[in-house]
Length: 238
Ligand code: SF4
Image 1 (spheres, rainbow, N blue to C red):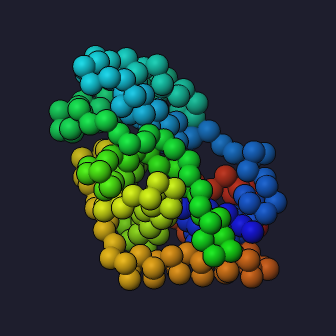
Image 2 (cartoon, rainbow, N blue to C red):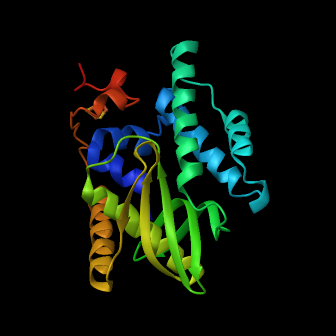
C-alpha cells in the first residue's frame, strides 16, 4: 500500500525520475541540499505555528517578532548579506500579516500531520492551520511562502487531500481551503461540491495507480530541475 501526499504527487507529476530517486531509491537524505527558500519557509511556518499557540492577549507584534527570531533557520544562505535580506523580507511579511489578519481566533488545529485510508491508498498531509467557524464547519489555511503557484490542478489536489483528511479524522465539514500567499497578501480559495470532491479523489487514486504501474520512471526536464536535489546524478540534467 503506498502513501499519497500533496508533495509526493507533485514530485511524481513534475518528474518521475525525481520521484524514483526520492521515494524508490530513498536517496533523499544523501542528496538533500539546504536551500535559502526552504529555510525561509520553515522559519515563517514555525513562527506562525507558535504565535497561534500563545494566548490572545500575548499576540502582540513584539512577540511575533520575538518568535520569528527564535525560529529563524540559518541553513542554506549563501552569505550573511543574503540571510539578512531574507530575514528582512520575512519581517515585512509578518508586519503585514499582523496588521491584516484576524489574530483573536483559536485555531482548531495547528501544524498537524494526518492520515486516512482511501480505497487501497493511504492519503497523508500536513495541515498548517484549521479554524472552526461553526460547531461543525472548518476552514483550512495553507501558508505559502513562495511564488503564487499556477498549477491549478495540483493546488486543487492538495486542497482535496486536506479536506478529505480533516473530514475523515474529525467528522466535520471543511467548507473552504485557503492558500494564503504571505508574500503577496493574496488568498486563493477552494471550495468543492460533492461531485467535484469525488472526482478529485478519483484522480488522486488514478495517480496512485499510475505510480504503481510505472516501471521506467523517465526524466522530465523543466525549469524546476534547478530545484531538484538529484541534478548531480541525473543523466538528463546537463
Ligand atoms: S534534474 Fe530534472 S530531469 Fe533530472 S531528476 Fe531532477 S527534475 Fe528530473
